[in-house]
View 1 (cartoon, rainbow, N blue to C red):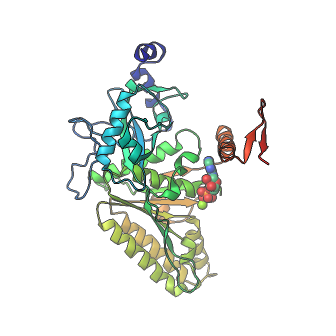
View 2: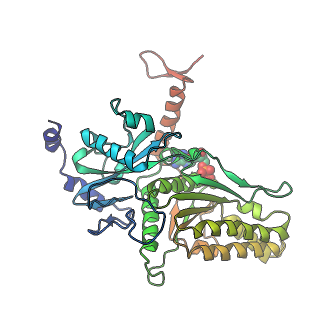
View 3: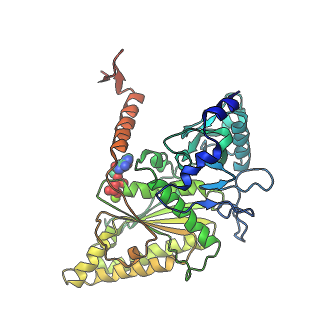
Length: 409
Ligand SMILES: Nc1ncnc2c1ncn2[C@@H]1O[C@H](COP(=O)(O)OP(=O)(O)O)[C@@H](O)[C@H]1O
Ligand SMILES: [Mg+2]
């Protein structure tokens, strides 16, 4: 009997969870309210919002970390085939049944689709358990009775980035993706950092959306929904922003029927046609504005390398650049300020310089996370995942009986 065995050898759920409450990396731990979770159960008036997932009567579902009665709520992401037309609710119920029927332990990674379930086989491409490290310390295993799975069903958009072409060979001013996008699939998992960084970002964003949804007065609790990731170049900041947007679009699928990521190309806004730049900014933000006005849309705006804005402003002040550039920066900042009043937009920014950046909106970032070089353990994992991939495709092979790797002839 796996239950008795497990009970003997593993800590009780409450003890297993105790460590998590004491974790040092801060962030909000969202607890379940008895009357609706507020994160995924929309009770407000927003039209068009759908709830994914069955869950028994009165069972409120949570999108992110939440603790109820010592039970860990673990995210289970279910990717549908591109051709599947099954309803998310039906798939969710089928996956819940499947998980219930198995007495499996919960570790991050894929769950095989049972061969005797034709419905799941026909519709589901992948089932993946995520973020169990939220709930355990020292990679202990969570057992099925310690867990309540929260199933998120999604399909990937295969459209690729939509571009707004710049005129006359100039750089395009932005890229746009419908999320969750095929391009960013697996990106979140591939990024390795010290424990807590990714979870902190995810929890922050969930709290930010919750606060605005619930109508928390911004004069009392100011909350701008701006994230700044800073650190040396090449540490994965841009990728992490995109991966975060992708992750949130999956976790909030039931609340926001459409998610979009807009990547603003700050460099292109300072094109040589300076007088045109003002127009570019206006055009860009008009488009964003149209998106956020639809309240079932969740919009992520990524402004990469914001220090280029600060540099342009500085250069304009010192007179080494035309004053047009200061107008562009100011126009951008004003537009960003306006955007903040919308509850369904999250602004993601990155910067390669770690010293203070002289930009108004960066001061208002709610979360400023330093993204440094990967830890020793993360470096090992990155190397290991690279080698595993080369083994998978057959470029490298194991030699017989040894640990050494050889290129395949
Ligand atoms: N900690 C990490 N774990 C896994 N991959 C990483 C990590 N840091 C950087 N990378 C990889 O390095 C590349 C460069 O990342 P990028 O997002 O462009 O960095 P940045 O924006 O900080 O300059 C990406 O392919 C990313 O996946
Ligand atoms: Mg970058």
